Length: 174
Image 1: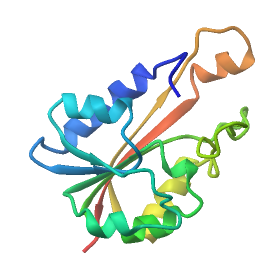
Image 2 (image 1 turned 135 degrees about the vertical axis):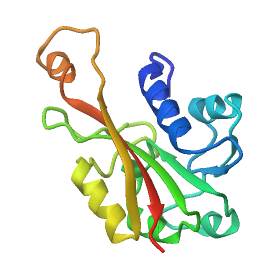
Image 3 (image 1 turned 120 degrees about the vertical axis):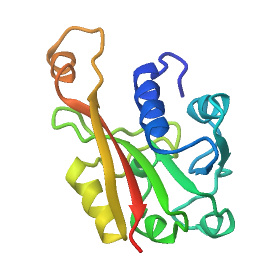
């Protein structure tokens, strides 16, 4: 997935946001298979376990079987058909979600060769906020950032000042 580019800026912002809100003593269930960022989290001292590639739209048993202090979902919710059910099933009290934001000048992403590498949802920030609210989560902190590219053209220009990523820290409402 990162053969040509490595999202250093996104990883840096995500790691800073995570460190701001949780301690390394807390256990984490990271939704999605092991990936470059989960390896970075482990190397930073976080106690982390990834899901194993099950289709979370149809099988949420891992959310009941793996009760951790924190659940992270970095760049995964846009791939899911049913994030509502997943958010309702999470047993942990703390949740971190990051998403690529919907860009009005760029269509939804769809790989023609990898069925898992497609975006079903292209969220705007208010949509993710509303989804969290409707599923019993209170947003504690949020952050957005741009993702400029070193190319010429209208889209690269727009990427310099249009927020591309959105990250949220939420806690379950009791």
